[in-house]
Image 1 (cartoon, one colour):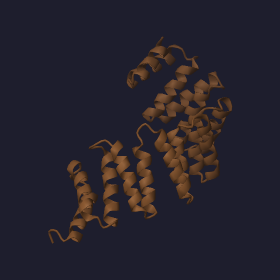
Image 2 (tube, helix red, strand yellow):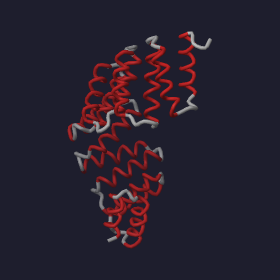
Image 3 (spheres, rainbow, N blue to C red):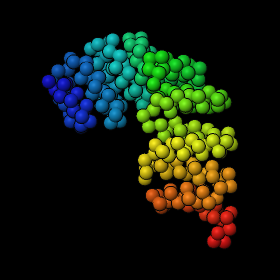
Image 4 (cartoon, rainbow, N blue to C red):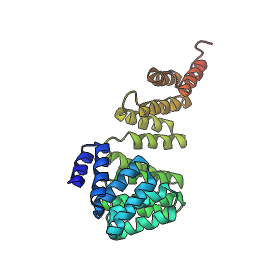
Length: 258
C-alpha cells in the first residue's frame, strides 16, 4: 500500500510525500526490491549519494536482475567518484535490459569523460536505435562531432535534435555558437533568432540568447542592432555587466555620447 502510495505522489510531482512513503515502505517491508530501488532514485535526486547506494545495493541483493537498481547504483557511484565500478553497474543494467536507452546514454557520458569518443558514439547510436527521437543523444553526438572537428556532422545532429525536441531552444543555441566559432555570424544570427522564438522572456535562457545575438551583431559591425539586443538583456537583467560593456562599446563605435 505504501509503495503504491509513493508512486501516486511521485506521478503528481509531490516528491517529499513520495519520499516519506517509500521510507515507511522499506521500514515496514525490507524485502521489496522496488521500494528500495525507487528510494535510491529519490536519494539520488536529493543528492544523498551514500544513501542512494545503500538502497540500490539492497534492491540488487534482493533481485540481482533488477536493471533500474543497477542504473541507480551506477549513478550513485559516479557521484562518489567510483567511475570504474559505475561503468560495471551500467554494463550489468544493459546485460539485463539491452533496450535501456537511459543507461546507454549515461554510459556514453563515462566514455566521453575518459576520452573514448568512438565508444561514446557507439553508446549514443545504440540509444537512438532504441528511440530515434532521443533528443539528448542527438545533442551528445553533435557535441562530440564538434569537438573532433567534424562540423558538418555536428550541424546534422543538431538538426535532428531540433526536429524532435519539444522546445528546441537549446540545440538552436548550440548550433548558433558553432557557427560563431567558425566565423559564420550571419548563419549564427538565423539560429539565434530561431532559438529566441522558443525562449521564455525574462528567463536565464533568454538573457543568454540575446547576448549571443549582440555578440554576432557587433562582429558584423551592426552596432545599432547590437545596442538593441543589449537593451533587451538589460531591460530584464539591469545588472548584467557583459551586456552593459558590449552596449557601451557599440555606442562608442557609433560615436554616440563620446
